[in-house]
Amino acid sequence: MFDLSVYLRYRPVEYDFYQLIRLAECLYVATQQHAAGLLPSDHPLDTEFIRFTQQADLNFSTQSVLAVNSDPDMPNKNILSVAMFGLFGSQGVLPPFYTELIHQRARQGDGAFRAYLDALNSRTLAFLFTAWHRNRYPFIHERRQRLEEKSAFRGEDLLSGFSGTHLDLFQQKPVLQQIASYFCGYFSNQRKTSAGLKAILSKVMGVEIKIGQFHARRYQLPESECNRLGSRASRLGVDFVAGHEVIDGNMSLRITTQPLSYAVFASLQPGRPLYQLVASVTEQYLGIGFDVELQPVLRSDEVPVATLGQDDFTNATRLGYNGWLDGRMPAMDANDVCFTLTGQTTG
Image (tube, rainbow, N blue to C red; front, side, top):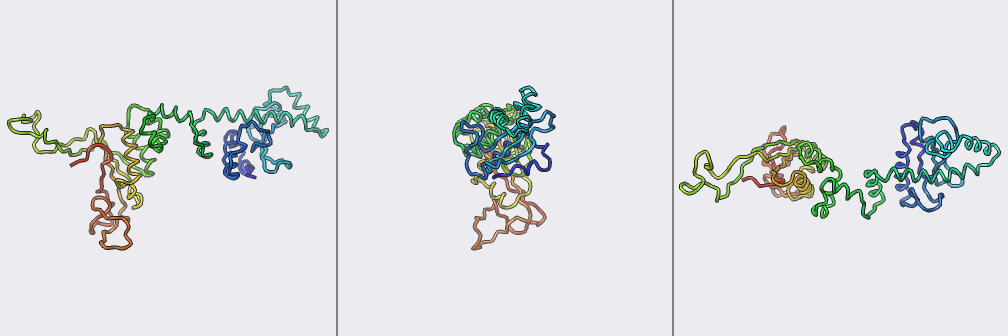
């Protein structure tokens, strides 16, 4: 039997009724390896994983959960003694006479009347917990993941519509939908902020990041937009540009990570799953039109030395990606690697 009394042994006042039932459900599923008997059910009470009994006193308790006991006839079942939402006792809906009658019957060795009221109260509390649980989508999502349910969930559709993640791309990539549902407050806001992007990507990558706004970048001009004397783009101060590049930073961002280990640094290389996930989340949050660069910083003590012909070297050395020529100062972090996440590639 999963033991709940240890959680009420020291500071029982810290545990709320709903919190303890959720904890009991988690322990029950983890120890019994099945979901039979979860609240509520249409089966007999002896099939449910927990039973409730009401405090038969008229004094007002300072906590909703009093104790966890076990029935000798049912050693694998916990009985939770509560002081809330009952038929008798100080919080009961019946007159105090019924509480006194329960004590009179108990002195005569007759517990049938209390057992009958506890049976009604146990099923009522089970439905009360279900009513509390029904409209709390984080707990529903937690239970569905714990029980590995695959059926449709109305709350996910509501969150998807609120955050704007009901698009086909999110349906094709469930991970993006989970991220957008988790950060639906950021995704639903029409004004996209750097603080929102920082919070999302810090959670996705698992590292602290900094976002530099208005980062100047060089853009290659198409041949059709380059100046030609006597033909086009030849007016000084209007449309004339010397050369084939322009510098602009109005729609550019640079995401810089904290110094990373080589394993995390390698996972942020172009083509890796984490890099693709970061690029997809960034594009879906900001939308089109932004040019975003990712600058993963490698710790100085993790910088590998390029060695040709090493037999046990499994990762290919690529200059500009994960390889550096010897001569770097050991105290310097490698911050000279930058990849394009979204937008145009600089020339």
